[in-house]
Length: 136
Image (cartoon, rainbow, N blue to C red; front, side, top):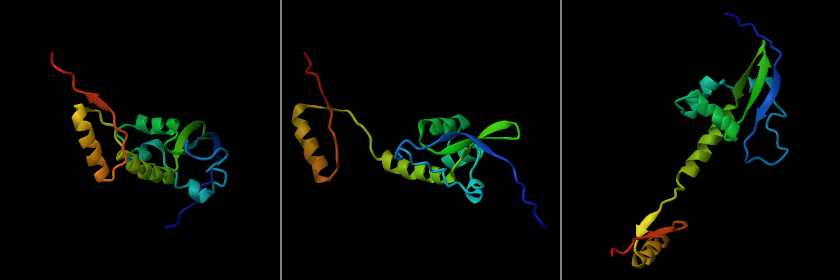
């Protein structure tokens, strides 16, 4: 069985670049045909992003969380997502998921106990307390 290589002219009409990149750092400047062949469409990327809807992948693109290019070929345009940026998204999401904000309802006397417990566990924190109201 032999395969025939197909060449299609593709025009990049829009780019989505992660917002944590340095200004002027274009990940698509040295885009090769081999690397471009690994890019996935929205539907395929949805599976790798682990999203339930295609719209979430588009939101990630427009928010600068994942990278991709919008290309025009054969009379229509389509977003193609860089799989490397999806891997980066998962790594970054894993480190971000441990940071949560909690609002504790505690009395003033419990505040120092909470602070001591967090420091003994060597946890970085910003503590916001919502003190219990006194019953009248």
